[in-house]
Length: 322
Image 1 (cartoon, rainbow, N blue to C red):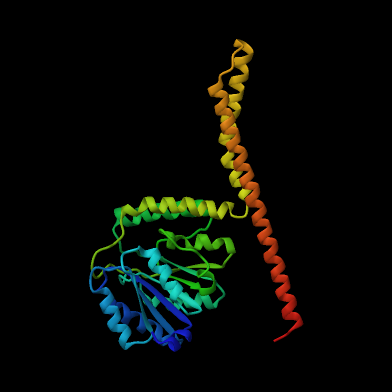
Image 2: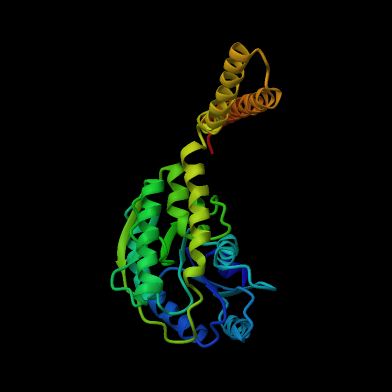
């Protein structure tokens, strides 16, 4: 891609692709038709996630004739989140819009997403108002997952699985993405307190190929949800997290010592296995609590240093105005 055109882009449209050779050309035409009337510089980043068909070749053909199109190609299939992360890392726009490459998301909704960004929101999430998917294998699991995610994270997003979203680049580029984390971006970003909006978006039935999603992803989503819950709840309170983990061990140690004391008092003998187990569990609990205290110290020192650096930067800017 032409570096000059890329550096001037205000909007970056990131689309992961996997075996979507028939969708590439219609997708490109739909995106350009939707964005050109907006009159802003833009780029389209198409990420080939190790497709086994001619997806990469189709994108390359388009990129050679349109310098606004950039091809990012993986040697093998890494998954949608990795592809999306690579596209976001490559993006140069101030606003980044992500969407699926199967033409089920409608690029015509990009204008509405950008309008919300202009109103001051940091993240704009689309939710598929009339979703054109199978009820049992797609809609019902999605509704259950959305309810669980909202309950666990406290971020009330109606449709976490909708890839059509808009982000301010400086925010999304600081969020680590792996596994199936792309659907948890609003929840992960909630730690920084962004302004999040939700809008209705159109959803079309798949025109080409077969769906890459199914019930097999459920367990990955549940595992990632546990990670998000941990990060969102205990990042600033490691002592609380380690303290909660140590409680079962303290309980087992207390039972073991109590059993040992009662046995010794009543029978005059000491059960070394039970007493030894109590010592092991108590030592493990102490180590966890010490780890929590150390984590608390590291977090507080890091926060203090960041505050001092911010104050120093403000003083420098005040003393030497540009």
